[in-house]
Amino acid sequence: MVSTAETAADFGSAAPAQLAPQRPLYKQALRFARRRPLGAVSGVLSILVLLVAVGAWQGILVPHNPITTHGADRLMDFGSTSADGERYYILGTDDLGRDMFSRLVVGAKISVFFGLGVSLIAVGIGGFVGLIATYLGGLVDLVVQRIVDAVQVVPLLVLAIAVVSISGPGIMKGFWVLAILSIPRPVRVIRGSVLSVREDVYVEAARSLGATNMRIVFRHVLPNVMAPMIVLASYIFAVAIIIEASLSFLGIGAQPPTPSWGAMLSGNGSVYFSTNPRLALMPGIAISIVVFATNMFGDALRDELDPRLRGS
Image (cartoon, rainbow, N blue to C red; front, side, top):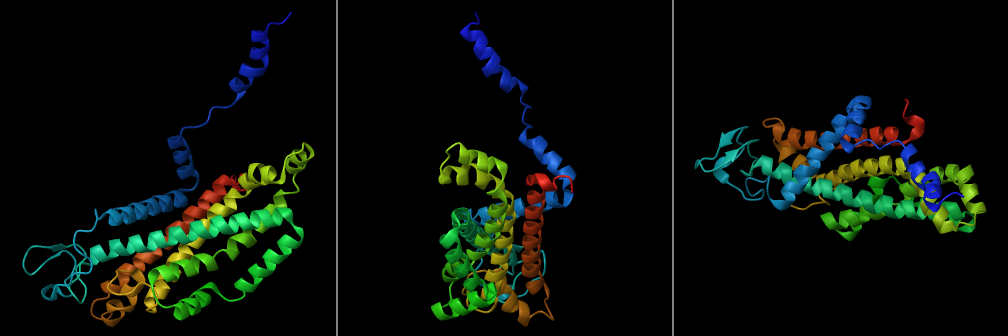
């Protein structure tokens, strides 16, 4: 007669012993860096920008008030000291004597949290709607896709400019307009992924065992569409930063004296470009670095998380 302890040893404790131990997080990061060096560098840049934004939010990395003007310190060059000797300007000052480094850091806070908020709202709502509508199919899917088609007819930037122009300028108005208008793209992308997943064998097996639609969607379908959702979130994040800068550049986004990278490009950056090009180059370079790093990091994560692309 086999004892209960022996039976438990045969069927309970033996199975976990055969499972491969999971790599520590730092080993996974090193493996990712070896396989995707450009993605790893982009990830480090993205994390640094996020830390700068958090530091600006707490006021840690802002040496001077970004909106306080100093007439005697106008257009100072890199590494200059104020006329009264009390302030040191790492990146110089603008045409009103405001510290460029402080304005860039605060502008990073605005752009990063703007992009994060838009991407989280768009991917969260759009992914949920696309997941449910596509899995249910039929009339629900048809109605949702026709609404998505109607919104995507007009380019996102043009539609955002039109809506913000009507509703009035402001950074928060631009945020909500862009977040809502960005929802259709995740719906379309997730639809394609769900269509390829919902007919797989494991989904049919779960359905045959009596699993509910909600359990199948969130337990079996959702984990298998996370890779496109991640890269889509990075894409929307980058697009949101560009559109926020575009709205501020046109004067319908962040309003003066709020430091915004787009407003810095269109204001003193364009006026003094021939004599002080750094006023436009610095916010332009900041936008380029953030957008490039975010896109490359998202692509590398997608390639690493998708089993079909790990060997590419």
